[in-house]
Every structure is written in structure tokens, then in C-alpha cells.
Image (cartoon, rainbow, N blue to C red):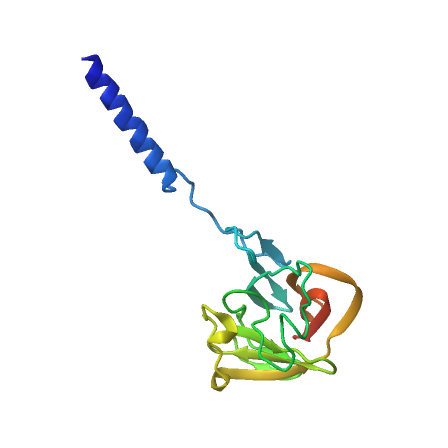
Length: 191
């Protein structure tokens, strides 16, 4: 009798450990409600370049952005890790995407409502090219980029600041979308 109870107890413990080890005991994550202000949702995984998501508004347009946030880690970023004059996924890992729920104007040019991957072409001097591409779900970012899927290309003037920012960030703030990394501030005017 005791042997049977011990075996049953061992089976219950093993089953419980398996259930919780597979994530069965986790509560379902719920999305935060959209608000008029930018909201950054913390990364859910332990990647070297965490996945970030933010929601907010530009005027009356609801905007959602998702990107991988790499860190400088003592590396030379511009012209080395991120080469000049080549398409960059504007983040890490899969392509960065931006979703607009209504039509917008980007640097004076019209862009229809929709979800787009966001690419840039960094330059050693002068304006950078900002690209909105219809293929937004690219697992390997710029390695799968195809120029024929570009929906809009505009130019934006980068600003270089004295203080370095370790981790890339993309924010919804005046004048629209602002990319920051290392000593770069790239404002993209969106109305």
C-alpha cells in the first residue's frame, strides 16, 4: 500500500513539474489599452537586442512600432557595424515595422494607412534616406529587403549629439518618429 502511494505521489510531482516547466501554469498576457501617449512594452525574451513595441498617436493617427533594440557594446556603429550607403533595417534581428491606421504625410510626401517595414540608408555626411517598404514581416531584416517593394523614400537630416545612447530607441515624439542610437538623432517628420 505504501509503495503505491509513493508511486502516485511521484507521478503527481513529475506531472506538475512538467506542466509548469512547459509554461502551462503561466497566466495569459494581456495587452495594455491604447492611449494617446507613447507606451513602450518591455521585451518578452532575453535576446541580445530585445524586441520593443510602442503605441501612440501622431495627430489623430494611431501608430504602432516594433523593433529590435541593439546596444553599442563598445563597437564602432556608423560606417562599421552599420555601413554607410547601404540599406539598414533600422534596428536588429527582424525588420522594424511601423503601422499607421490612417494616411499620413512623411517629410512632405503622402503615405497610405498600413503596415510598413522601416529601413534607412545612413550616410557619412548629409541627409539619410528613409524607406517605407510593403514587405513588413521580414525575418532577417535587410537581408531579405527588395527595393521593388518600396512604397515611399524620403530624406531626413540626422543630428549628431555629444552624449552617446547605449541602446537604440525609436520614439513617437515631435516631429513624428525619432530614432536614437549612439550619438545619432534621426527625426522623421510625420503629420
